[in-house]
Length: 167
Image 1 (tube, rainbow, N blue to C red):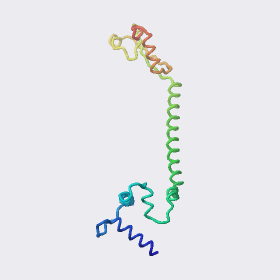
Image 2: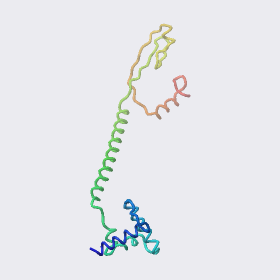
Image 3: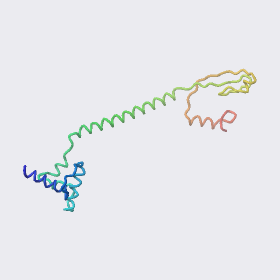
Image 4: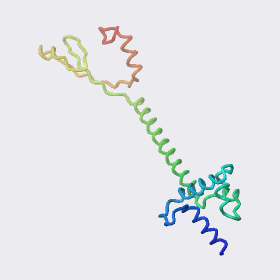
């Protein structure tokens, strides 16, 4: 025990350096870095790990470096559950999106059009000219198949201007 205490005193003296006053305790990482840097200054050809472990007698460096945390399994399990939860959430969102797309494709929409019996004009809004002239206007409702945006554009390109297209 006295040999261990002497070794501890020696390490404390190295850590304090030339200051006789005790310093406030610092985090473990700073302490290890300070010990390593002082030992490296004494012998620059050693590795950092060896320089740290040379201060302690009877320690097998390889054995210490191979040891794993007691909580490694719990940490791995938590990380696994987090990743599994994220994946299941993404799968759920994808499933909802595909359901919405299928529903949009299956369901048509109700198109409401106004037809003037006198002028034979068909429009989506009530024709004001026909209303002013007291023409009889019929409301026509029909279920149309929903089109994708590209299909609607193709239809507009293929129709003439008279038909409401772009040609």
